[in-house]
Structures are given as C-alpha cells and as structure tokens.
Length: 111
Length: 116
Image (cartoon, rainbow over all chains, first blue to last red; front, side, top):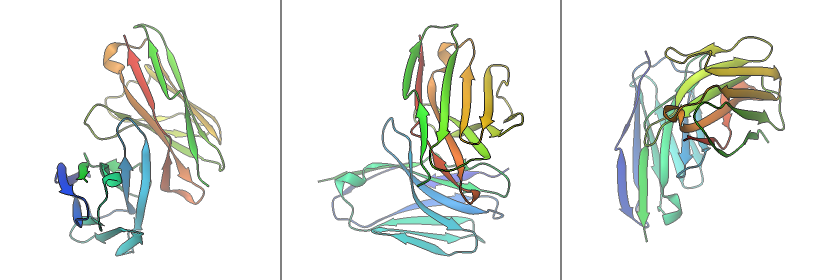
C-alpha cells in the first residue's frame, strides 16, 4: 500500500530565505507526483506536476525534483515571501488510481 | 482552463438531514471524478471514485449507503451525505481528471460541512 510522508510537518522561516520541503513515498511505481498548496479553509492549488519519466519541474520561484527510484521528491522555494505561507501537500498517483496525499508541511514565512 | 467548481462552499445542517454537494467540471469533460474528505489538520483521504454512467467505487471503510454518489453526466458528479451526523462534519473536496485523462487532477474549492 502506497504511503506518502512529508517532512517537516511545520516550518517557520524569515522572509527571503530559500527552503526545501521533503516528500517520500514507499512504492516507486508511480504515474506522477504533484505538489499542491492549500490555504486555511480553502481548496487545493496545483503548483507542479512531475511525470514519472521527468526529474524536475520549475515554475517561477518553485522547483520540484523527483527521484523515483529512491521514492523522494523535494519542493524548493526560493526567496520566500509572507504570501507563501500555506500548507504544502505532496501527492502521488499510480496508474488507474486517485491521488494519495501526504499530511502536508505547514509553512510560515515572517516579514 | 480545467476549472472545477463545487457548490455549496459551506453548509450547516441539523443532525439527521441529508446534504447534497455538487462538483462540476466547467470547461472540460471528466469521465472520472474523485471525492475526498479532509478532517482538521489531516490530509485528504479518498472516499470514492465516480465514473460517468456507472456505479461509484468506494474506499474501504466508506459507507456507500451513507455517501451517495451520482455521476450522471460528463461534467457533474454529486455527493449526498444522508442522515448526516456531527461526525460527518468535514471538508469535502472533489477532483476531476483533466482533459488528457486523470493523469492530472484538478480540484474544486471544497465544501465545508458542519452538522449540528
């Protein structure tokens, strides 16, 4: 059974700092991996989608990497801003299944 | 593109009543939609997979008679919580497979259900 783990559970950083969020999964037979952002009481915003054949994806200040063989992904946020404060969720899909989510990392960026 | 809406965004109801939540893909057709539930400070847990024109597939531990799912068209799936109780209070989120299939899923904004 696929399990997704995110470390750390919470993170507080000052504005401007670069940071890395970690995601690991137990079954490397994934179809793709997605990173989402969730603001309190809100739905999900898709940030990056990495196909199983890809190593990384970039969007603005965000960069996500995928090492499928080791079951790991990282989300790198450059020059963090207070507006980046949210919960970041990692999720994997396997062929024919819905997404399996980690518990998320709650990020707080102080100004 | 690939926008998913949910209605209502929040609902408060009395114990014992039924509540219907709609999930719509606005600009694409979705053969498959998924329903998730999220309790406070927890992650999203899949409840069921909804396929257009067929019965939904429920995850283990989810009562199909309590959580009725209907996917009557390629743009609409509904989740009805029957005889809701306080323990059903949660954040319900739907997602739909994107235009290229459910390789990439697009999520609705969620519905906050509070049962008194």
